[in-house]
Length: 118
Image 1 (cartoon, rainbow, N blue to C red):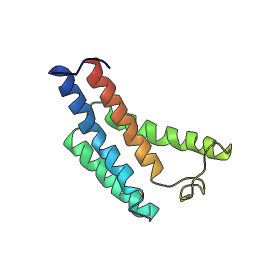
Image 2 (cartoon, one colour):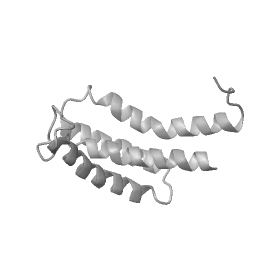
Image 3 (tube, rainbow, N blue to C red):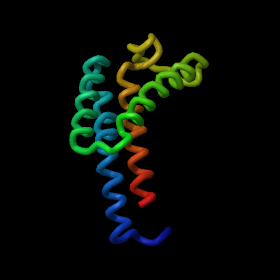
Protein backbone atom coordinates (compact mmCIF):
# COMPACT_ATOMS: atom_id res chain seq x y z
CA UNK A 1 0.00 0.00 0.00
CA UNK A 2 1.35 3.40 -1.00
CA UNK A 3 1.55 6.61 0.97
CA UNK A 4 -1.63 8.35 2.12
CA UNK A 5 -2.41 11.33 -0.13
CA UNK A 6 -2.18 14.74 1.53
CA UNK A 7 -2.62 18.40 0.62
CA UNK A 8 -2.56 18.90 -3.13
CA UNK A 9 -3.19 15.23 -3.90
CA UNK A 10 -6.35 15.20 -1.77
CA UNK A 11 -7.55 18.35 -3.52
CA UNK A 12 -7.06 16.66 -6.90
CA UNK A 13 -8.93 13.55 -5.75
CA UNK A 14 -11.79 15.70 -4.48
CA UNK A 15 -11.99 17.67 -7.77
CA UNK A 16 -12.00 14.44 -9.80
CA UNK A 17 -14.76 13.04 -7.58
CA UNK A 18 -16.87 16.20 -7.99
CA UNK A 19 -16.52 15.97 -11.78
CA UNK A 20 -17.65 12.33 -11.61
CA UNK A 21 -20.78 13.06 -9.54
CA UNK A 22 -23.06 13.65 -12.59
CA UNK A 23 -21.95 10.29 -14.07
CA UNK A 24 -22.54 8.52 -10.75
CA UNK A 25 -25.99 10.13 -10.46
CA UNK A 26 -26.88 9.04 -14.00
CA UNK A 27 -25.84 5.45 -13.25
CA UNK A 28 -27.90 5.40 -10.04
CA UNK A 29 -30.99 6.54 -11.98
CA UNK A 30 -30.90 3.67 -14.51
CA UNK A 31 -32.89 1.15 -12.43
CA UNK A 32 -35.10 3.88 -10.95
CA UNK A 33 -36.44 5.35 -14.21
CA UNK A 34 -37.81 2.63 -16.46
CA UNK A 35 -38.88 4.85 -19.39
CA UNK A 36 -35.84 5.33 -21.64
CA UNK A 37 -37.10 8.63 -23.08
CA UNK A 38 -37.74 10.11 -19.64
CA UNK A 39 -34.31 8.92 -18.50
CA UNK A 40 -32.69 10.52 -21.58
CA UNK A 41 -34.46 13.80 -20.75
CA UNK A 42 -33.30 13.61 -17.14
CA UNK A 43 -29.75 12.93 -18.36
CA UNK A 44 -29.96 15.96 -20.66
CA UNK A 45 -31.03 18.10 -17.69
CA UNK A 46 -28.19 16.76 -15.51
CA UNK A 47 -25.67 17.44 -18.28
CA UNK A 48 -27.04 20.95 -18.87
CA UNK A 49 -26.83 21.69 -15.14
CA UNK A 50 -23.28 20.32 -14.99
CA UNK A 51 -22.26 22.49 -17.94
CA UNK A 52 -23.90 25.54 -16.34
CA UNK A 53 -21.95 24.87 -13.15
CA UNK A 54 -18.67 24.49 -15.03
CA UNK A 55 -17.79 24.27 -18.68
CA UNK A 56 -14.26 23.98 -19.93
CA UNK A 57 -12.98 25.19 -23.25
CA UNK A 58 -13.52 21.94 -25.17
CA UNK A 59 -16.20 20.25 -23.05
CA UNK A 60 -18.95 20.60 -25.67
CA UNK A 61 -16.72 19.19 -28.41
CA UNK A 62 -15.67 16.26 -26.21
CA UNK A 63 -19.30 15.59 -25.27
CA UNK A 64 -20.49 15.60 -28.91
CA UNK A 65 -17.59 13.37 -29.96
CA UNK A 66 -18.28 10.90 -27.12
CA UNK A 67 -22.01 10.94 -27.86
CA UNK A 68 -21.68 10.02 -31.53
CA UNK A 69 -18.56 7.85 -31.28
CA UNK A 70 -20.22 5.65 -28.67
CA UNK A 71 -23.36 5.24 -30.79
CA UNK A 72 -21.11 3.80 -33.51
CA UNK A 73 -19.08 1.64 -31.12
CA UNK A 74 -22.09 0.37 -29.19
CA UNK A 75 -23.78 -0.43 -32.51
CA UNK A 76 -20.72 -2.48 -33.49
CA UNK A 77 -20.60 -4.25 -30.11
CA UNK A 78 -24.29 -5.16 -30.24
CA UNK A 79 -24.30 -6.16 -33.91
CA UNK A 80 -21.35 -8.52 -33.37
CA UNK A 81 -22.95 -10.08 -30.29
CA UNK A 82 -20.29 -8.77 -27.88
CA UNK A 83 -22.91 -6.82 -25.96
CA UNK A 84 -26.68 -7.02 -25.54
CA UNK A 85 -29.27 -4.72 -24.00
CA UNK A 86 -32.75 -5.44 -22.67
CA UNK A 87 -33.63 -1.80 -23.28
CA UNK A 88 -33.26 -1.02 -26.98
CA UNK A 89 -35.02 2.27 -27.73
CA UNK A 90 -32.23 3.61 -30.01
CA UNK A 91 -31.89 1.90 -33.38
CA UNK A 92 -33.55 -1.16 -31.85
CA UNK A 93 -30.18 -2.04 -30.32
CA UNK A 94 -29.40 0.08 -27.27
CA UNK A 95 -31.09 2.44 -24.81
CA UNK A 96 -31.50 6.00 -26.09
CA UNK A 97 -29.98 7.39 -22.88
CA UNK A 98 -26.69 5.50 -23.29
CA UNK A 99 -24.98 8.01 -25.63
CA UNK A 100 -25.78 10.80 -23.14
CA UNK A 101 -24.10 8.82 -20.37
CA UNK A 102 -21.07 8.04 -22.54
CA UNK A 103 -20.84 11.60 -23.87
CA UNK A 104 -20.68 13.09 -20.40
CA UNK A 105 -18.40 10.25 -19.29
CA UNK A 106 -15.91 11.43 -21.93
CA UNK A 107 -16.10 14.94 -20.45
CA UNK A 108 -15.52 13.66 -16.90
CA UNK A 109 -12.54 11.60 -18.03
CA UNK A 110 -11.03 14.54 -19.93
CA UNK A 111 -11.44 16.74 -16.86
CA UNK A 112 -9.84 14.09 -14.63
CA UNK A 113 -6.82 13.86 -16.94
CA UNK A 114 -6.56 17.64 -16.98
CA UNK A 115 -6.64 17.75 -13.16
CA UNK A 116 -3.96 15.07 -12.91
CA UNK A 117 -1.74 16.89 -15.41
CA UNK A 118 -1.65 20.07 -13.29
